[in-house]
Image 1 (tube, rainbow, N blue to C red):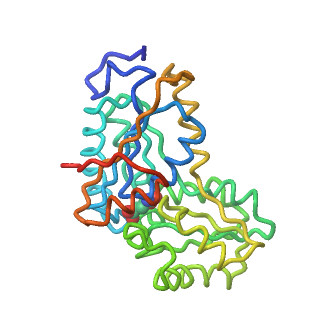
Image 2: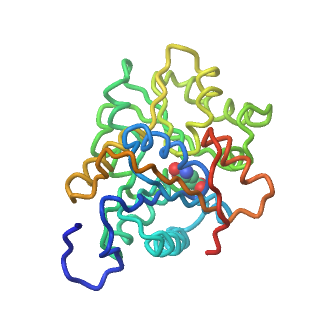
Length: 279
Ligand code: DGL
């Protein structure tokens, strides 16, 4: 049983190791993180919320994003989750502090993989693809101050890419043109390592790798997030033991688009249990 301090913060005092993990994103991008979690922690059930009606978050104010994060967290906590993964760089930068102040359960966030990119770079020039919200955030500035010293970090805000992924347009000509237009300045400036600083972008990895070629490393944070989740669950005695009891993966979306279930299904890669989200 999860040991809790007595306070008034919303949490699931009844949550146990068999409770699901909540994963949230502005939309379908966090499914790229869900894949890493499923791989590392195959015995964990996952409840995923795609806030697609409110996507993209990248052009919203921190206050607006925090309001959405609270609404989704309230929903997931009411469904009985034992931990929350904010599978969104933009929401982590804008809201994770407020979420941790408000809720009493493990909350795992994410940030662009600047630190591993600095390690991987051979020529000291890295490019970061992210939303404008992430790039303008204090958290991103702190990340550069902590890990970017002596390295040239080129930030590229990618307006419109989240929407391409939300529509399931991963290989269309218009998507390719947009990706190319964002990568070109980074390539012109000799970046040898590209950071995918938004969880939607790993779904564009094949396109990105095709454009940058084999000599440029492309890095994302999904694996690191799954490792951090595993650590937190072990620390809090909430890790689901290896059993044959079967897992549940459920998606909620508030998208009004008729193609939304098909997009989720494609990105998830198998038949998905999809519910309509009312918040
Ligand atoms: N997947 C979100 C991220 O990692 C996208 C944010 C948005 O909706 O603009 O930043």
